[in-house]
Image 1 (tube, helix red, strand yellow):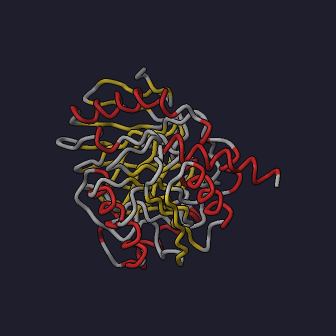
Image 2: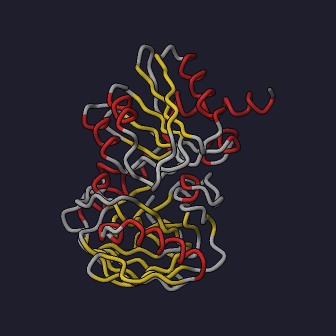
Length: 325
C-alpha cells in the first residue's frame, strides 16, 4: 500500500499538472500487456479524483514502435478528450494520435513507463517553469535553415530545416488541446528536410530492448536517409528490425530533438532517456507528427551525449550545455 501511495504522486501529476484534466472530460487510458496494470489503475483513480469520466482499454502490444494501434483502439481514442497511452510499444507517431489532436483532443504518451517512474524522476520537473525555454529553442528552429550537430564520440551531421517549424511540436510536458506530448520527456524537436553526415549514438537506443549502450552505434547518412549502421549487437538488432519491415521509409532522418528535463535519468527507458538534459537525439522513421512528410512503420530515437549544435552558424548548445536561457 505504501508503494501505491507513492505511485499516486506520479498519477496525480500526470492528470492534474501535465494534462490539466477538467471535471466531466472523457479520459481514456490505453494499456498493453507489457505495462504493469497498476499504472492504468492509478491513472483511473487520479482521473476520478478530478471528476473526469475515465475508461481503460487493454490491448495487445504493437509489433513496432509507432506502428498503428488496433482499429477499435483508434476509435476509442478518437472519442476521448484526453488519452493516456501507458504502453510498452509506442503508438505515439501514428495516424491515431494525429486524429485525436486534429479534433482538439490531447494525448499524454507514457511509453515504457514503470512503477518506479510514477514515484519520482522526470515527473518531478517544474514543467511550467521550463516551458518558456523550450519554446525559445523552438522559435530558433522556426527561423533556421542549416543545423550542424557534432559530439565528442564522432557525430557530425548537417541538417536542412528550411521551412520546418519547431514551435507547433515543442514538447513541454504540459499537454494542451490539439497536442501530444511524451511525458516526462521535455524536448524541442524539429523535422529536417534532409540530412548528411554521420551519427555516433553513444548514450541510448530505448527501443527493441536495447536501452543504455555498452558500445557506440554508428550510422552513415546520405540524402536524408541512413545508408549503413554498425556497432555490435545493438546495431544488428536495429538493422534486422528495419530490414524485416521492407519499407525504405524506416531509414528517413525524421527528427532532431534536444532533451531539456533536468530531472530525467538515463535508464534505458524511452521517455526518461529522450528528455535527459545535456543530450540530443536523432529520430529515424516517421516524421508526419513532427512537421515532416514521411509515414514509416516505426520511429526509433538515437540518443547522444554532450552535443554541440549550431543553427545558421550560431551555437545554441556547446558540449551538452544549452546556451539559450
